[in-house]
Amino acid sequence: MYIEILLLGVIVFVVLTANGFIKPDKFIQDNQDIFYKLKEDDYAFLVKAKYGDGLDPDVLFQKRIRNGMLVIVLLLFVFISNMSAVKVVFAFVGGFAMFKLDYLNLKNFYKAHLNLIDSMLPYYLKGLEILIQHYTVPVAIGKSIGDAPEIFRDGLVDMINKINAGDATVNPYMEFAQTYPVRDSMRMMRLLYRLSLGRQERKQEQLITFSKTISNLQQKAREMRYKARLDKMESKTMSMLVATGVCSMVLLVIAVMNMMSSA
Figure 1: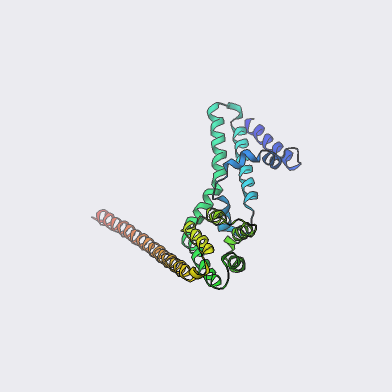
Figure 2: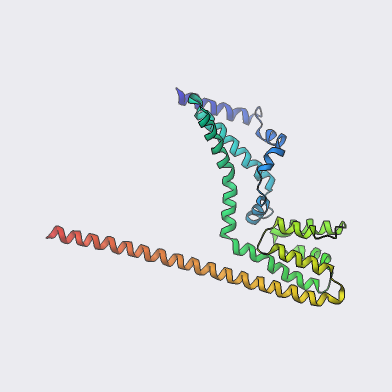
């Protein structure tokens, strides 16, 4: 009887939601100031790192909230016949775990592709360096957006719009670095800002420093990619050795057991 009531409750909830009597999205939007406090600082960056501009981070975040709330409701339905404070807490913990699952998947994707994503900034800056030789830094950034990696384009547009609006401080550069927390982004944005402030007679000297720093970052990125390949090959080799060792031990045990049974 309990299973039938539980299934009926789930069906009623789904029907009411499908027909608009229950509106989770409206509830989320009405309370977004509260829910958005749960949003991780690097969530938008991780979404762009995996999906590019194909998906809106805010839409995905609302979907995470909706999925978490759905798990809470379903668990409360499951515990409804024997409700207790511990089970209510368990339901909310389960909902929060569901809410965090998508973020953890994005984090794992970033870690798995860390070297590739981190290497994008130095190679972009290398192309930007060539433009800076002929234009001012803001103009060079504006001209580079079309050739920039897709993951950085929105941030570059925001940065150049703030600079063109009259913000001559380091803030637009630092906000870009905070939005895209790849390796050495803070240091490179500071160097870029100093380069934008430099007098024309010192521009060549500053460009040389900027170029050397970018070359060092590119070299570091190549070394990290090479190390990642070596680690992967070493891991596969160890797995093969362990598998070979285990198979040899199994065959040896079988041979000994056959000899003992024959004797």
